[in-house]
Length: 247
Ligand SMILES: [Zn+2]
Image 1 (tube, rainbow, N blue to C red):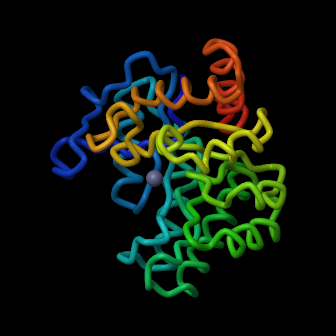
Image 2: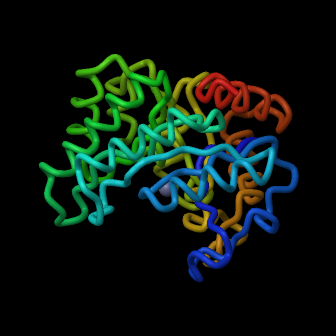
């Protein structure tokens, strides 16, 4: 199993993310991709990836992150990309219109990161909330690839997402019936699973902190939806994740 999207921080950095490189509950997993939300935790991801073989870093600036300088932050991300081989993706980046934060600035920092991903031949981890059509339109302007993290575009937008993108599905699949229909419609060779831990905890741990190892419950749910064995399902999904991140 591969958790393609987790947030893990060193214990001292943030009390609300109580995970460390040592005790991050990744048993049974082959890889865990650490998503970056800002420069600080992108740098922390790079360090965590050095500390544990199973951890892989992504570096990026989340659209709800407001504390950055448009020009220097792209340069800083580029420095990280140049100097670290264990970075497997740029992100998470994208558009989030659930916040009141300037759409124009969100778009500028998103485009900056798309261009970086293209330049360094990395996939993008795309965050899109209440902005599905706008996000898809921007991605279609470029020759880029990656994953739409925590896909919320519904069945009707699946075909509009560029074919070079995978669909990331999270633990809320275990309790949101609408997502079952979405999973049925996503091509099997473009589905990857993610925890977004410490958020979006699946049943039977809903309401608790999420951990990468809880990805198992989402694999079980997909196996049930596909009508396949756990092993067959795991093989397909992990194959997708490996192609996506070239791991
Ligand atoms: Zn995330």
